[in-house]
Amino acid sequence: FRRYPFALLELFLLMQQHPEIEGVRASTIRLVRDHLHLIDDDFRHDIRTRSLFMEIFRQPRGLTHELRRMNRYGVLAAYYPVFANIVGQMQHDLFHTYTVDEHTLFVVRNLRRFAVEEFAHEFPLCSRLSGEIPKPELLYLAGFFHDIAKGRGGDHAELGAEDAYRFLQSHGLPEYDCKLVAWLVRNHLLMSHVAQRRDISDPDVIHEFATRVGDRTRLDYLYLLTVADIRATNPTLWNNWKDALFRELYNATRRALRRGLENPLHRDELIRDIQQQAAAHLAERGISREMLDRLWSHFPTDYFLRHSVDEAVWHASVILAEGHTKGVRVALNPESERGGSALFVYTPVIDRLFNRTTALIDQLGLSITDARVITSTNDYAINTYQILNSAGEPLTDPYDGQELVTLMEHELKHPQDSVVGRGIRQAPRRLRQFHTRTRVEFHRDEAGRRTILELFTTDYPGLLSRIGQTFWQQGIALHNAKIATFGSRAEDVFYITDRDGQLLDEARQEALRRAIIEALEPEED
Image 1 (cartoon, rainbow, N blue to C red):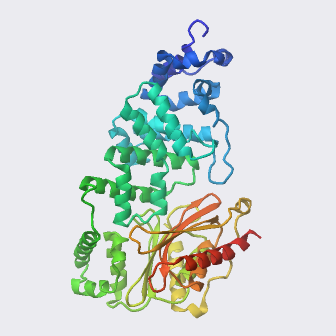
Image 2 (cartoon, one colour):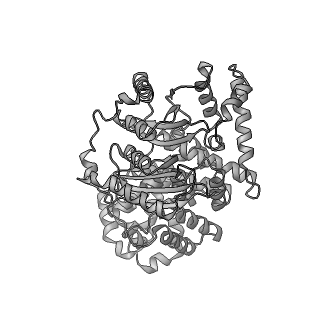
Image 3 (tube, rainbow, N blue to C red):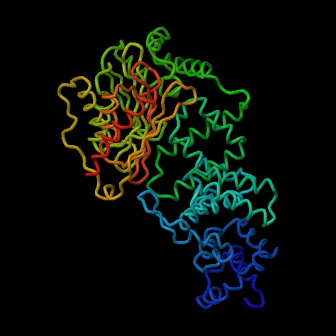
């Protein structure tokens, strides 16, 4: 190493290029660690070492193994001292399982796994896109840099983007490549935020996101990085619902980009297309367009914007199964297109409906990931809940599904004989140790038609039910809910108005904020 210090990097490149090499002797490892002092500024600025480092990222195999080996031996932190700041850095919550450096290398591992044919069955879309992106090494570099500025203070995504740009520019990458990696690092949380906190059934939301992404290449890179990042944060975070949610956003954005940002899809066109396709499918089941028009005449336009063709077909089939539209209907699709089990509730509007339904779902040990709440012009609730069991999976056991449907029908048909509240689940002890102070924020949606309430609080059983009770007491109408849980922390988004369909003014917002905090904070006792 003293005669040829560049071997401190070349060692790892040779391991990649010769998979028949089984490992590194303990004596060699000691020599590497004893000569880390040779990795000084002259070493880092030498074009030969910079070429070696970039070549490690371009190899078709062994990247994850060698980056981990470089990290264990101290070479990675010696060559790029900024990396030393995240080595062993803990993240004190139930959301992040790994230290920052471990998480970073897991992200790179996940990205590499997308490119290995042996694992193509795990994430087919990711595997296909991984084979189509022009320069896979740029994706791996984005994974390497995405959290490089964690714990430094300030916006870690922005600071990390600046670090990535400087590093790659100094290593001789073309300007376009440097800017692409920097953009990915800067925006590595963007897709997650839009998918989990915005109403992606709204064409305006999709158009805004597509405008920020700009082109198909960036979209493909960002989707791959987002999936790899979430899966590397905590093994329990990724489930069928999240998979379906992110694919829905990806596909909708890809369609918007293909159509052209200057030619966005308008609401009227989308509604007309959904109705025509749904009517064609329902005609095959003997449901006439006349019957559909009578039913749909009471549905607000939001219904068709927020449901797919398959969902509209399912809902109409359930409602019209008895030849009329009166009464209560409850149905379960065990494996819906959105990745969970879909519970459909069609019922005359009753007091505390959201509170009652969510409380019952929670009481059965189930979790809600998405709630689409619609009220027809003839005062019927048309609500769809995406549900997962305690293991984060759909309700594939017929007994569990039938129990849910039977109890929900009883709850709605006989509200005076409610089963809700008989045996409230307690929050697990480990959740009670990680308290998140309740915070409520308000915004307007893109069209200025609804008030967006963002809630940050400790997650515990019955949370949604308590929110629903507060909405009812405060005269709030709920239109949509996006439910996201990160370890012990709930980050939920509610699209609301007052009961007359008007936006909440500042006074109503402040009153609602106080009521929610008052309703939720006692749970810390």
